[in-house]
Every structure is written in structure tokens, then in C-alpha cells.
Image 1 (cartoon, helix red, strand yellow):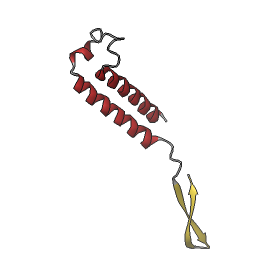
Image 2 (cartoon, rainbow, N blue to C red):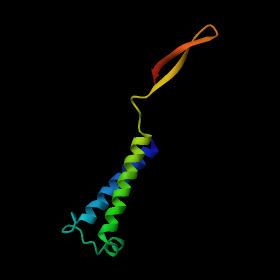
Image 3 (cartoon, one colour):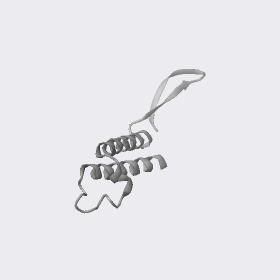
Image 4 (cartoon, rainbow, N blue to C red):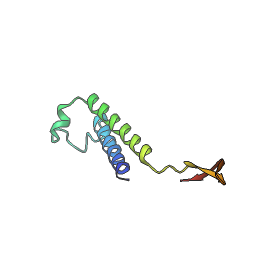
Length: 89
């Protein structure tokens, strides 16, 4: 659950950085006030933003609830296993 929340936070941070690199907030926020963003080229900010978004998506998909997963349980008849029964996790 915590890793999924971290994934959402990484995606939001990546989207905000992507907006900064593309100049969406250029007229509303002066980037000179944010020192580290004005010193870095917009291409590098875009690359970091895409990596953050990708890592966030990976965490959300990897650690999210899997609705379609099935579990195989053995079916026994006496001491002999005769098959498997599929159940939802």
C-alpha cells in the first residue's frame, strides 16, 4: 500500500516537472525564484520527469491490487491428488 502511494507521488511530481520543462507555468511562476530549475536545461528536466512518471506507473501497477489473479489449490481424494481447483486470491 505504501509503495503504491509512493508511486502516485512520483507520478504527480513527474507531471509537475514536465509542466515546468514545457513552459506551461512560465507566465504564472517565475523560474528564477526556483534556483535548481533555472540552472538546468529543460531537456534534462523533461527526461527526469518522464523517468519519474515511468517509475510511478511501475510502482502502481506492480504493487496494486491484482483483481484477476487466481490461486491453484490441489484437490485430494484420500491420499491421491486428482487435480487442481482455481480460487481467487
